[in-house]
Structures are given as structure tokens and as C-alpha cells.
Image (cartoon, rainbow, N blue to C red; front, top):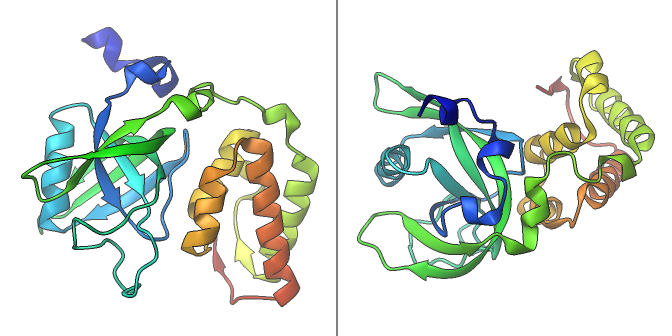
Length: 233
């Protein structure tokens, strides 16, 4: 309906009951999603092309969930449907969708809320479907909750130092204008850390805690005087 088409994510998903109790899962090592942050994805595997097609014809909601660490860590997304997955992930809505001539899909997921896996649904589909609970993370649905508790000055100080030391270029004026929630969640999604660090950022209880984890990780990198220059989008 036209009115529904114009809803923001916060308006569309105001409480856990507004989200589907069973969602398709995209297990992806080293990738997380957080509320109102975005995650661009290049979809080319047949199992996930089918998953996106199915999602687009239903609720358009997909769960991003990291696999547990395994012997074969070169595999970003496990082929084995019995592979162990993390217990906590984040549901996102497909907010951008583009089909390419070679059959790939370029999509953007926008984060809604984190979830806990409570079971796996039996399915003949080539992808996995989980029963999930959003109750533990219901506060994720309130935009900007806890922003005032973040030590923004310290976060920006460490971020600026990190960018300078690693010769990373970004639009500093845009960063300064960004809300605390957007800044913290977007940095957590795009930061170049490993699966364990990413999961710690995902599972941080609130924005203040997540900002503290970000600062701690950046300071560890600074202490080891890390990397070559590139561009932070």
C-alpha cells in the first residue's frame, strides 16, 4: 500500500512482533550488520540468488550471521548446512536491489535489529532458515537510544589518529555531522577487523559499550602501528 511504502524502518518495525519469526540466513565470516547501518552484498552463488529471490517476494528480511571458526577459514560462507553458526546475528531489510547482466545481484541490507537463534527450520531450500527471537535486543528498534552516553570526543580523537597513522582518507566533515548511532554502527560494520572482534562489536550491549570496543580495537592497532594507506568510505 502507498502509505506503507513510505514508512521508515523504525516505523515499519516498531516492536519485535513486527518482524518474521523465521528468516533466511546468510552466514558470512567477518561480516556483521547493525541497526540502521548498511551492508552492500555481491550475490553470485545459486543458493543465495534463490534466497534473495524468495526474500524479495516475502518480507525482504534476511539475517546476517557469522559461522563459528572452523578448520577451513578460507571459506567465507560454509557449504555444509550443518556447519555451526554463531548464536547472535542481525536482521536486515533489502533496501537496494540491482540485477547485473552476468546474473549477479548487487543488494544493500539495512540493519533492523539483532536476534538470537532459537532453532533451525527444516527446509528443502539450498539455504538455511532460522527461528529467531528479537526480544533480548528490542531496544535496537528505538533509533538513537543511548547516544547521549557515548564519549563522542574520545571516539573522534582516536578515529582521527587512526586515520592519520594508517593514511586513510575520508570526509571528516561528514563524520563530524553524523549521529553517534550512525557513526558507531557504520564504523563497526566496515572496520577491517577479524571475526572475533566483529562479533564483540555486534554483541556489545549498547552504543556506549560498542564505542568503547571500537576505541579499544583502534588503540591496539595504533600501538602496533599497523597498515598501508587506502580510503575509508
